[in-house]
Image 1 (cartoon, rainbow, N blue to C red):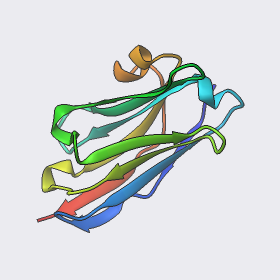
Image 2 (cartoon, rainbow, N blue to C red):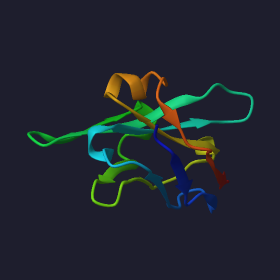
Image 3 (cartoon, one colour):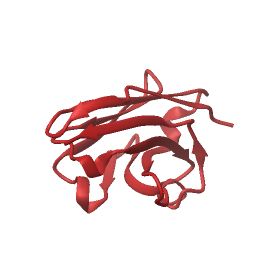
Image 4 (cartoon, helix red, strand yellow):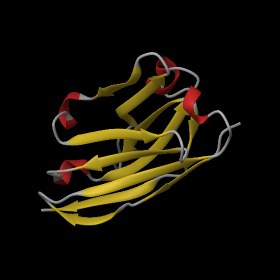
Length: 125
């Protein structure tokens, strides 16, 4: 069982930046793939980005096309955290952002892993 707690959401103007963090419980954080999803009002939850890690190859990252070049996911295995740096924010990025964890990148990207409670990100125009 993994518990996830997000922080860092808030209100920002278009073009601004926010940094989300997710702290995970458990002693095997480095073995989990981690990711972020978001859900805007009236829309389905959608994949945003994910990161995996292995001792041999390091981190691998994945992004939905609409956030490539603006969002950066990173992880700190020593602190059991995954971060999402969001730059050049747009009003269409407004959503509740959820942290996700799973045994593999496929589990995370298909939404079949563990979830945090979500944090609101609002981008004003």
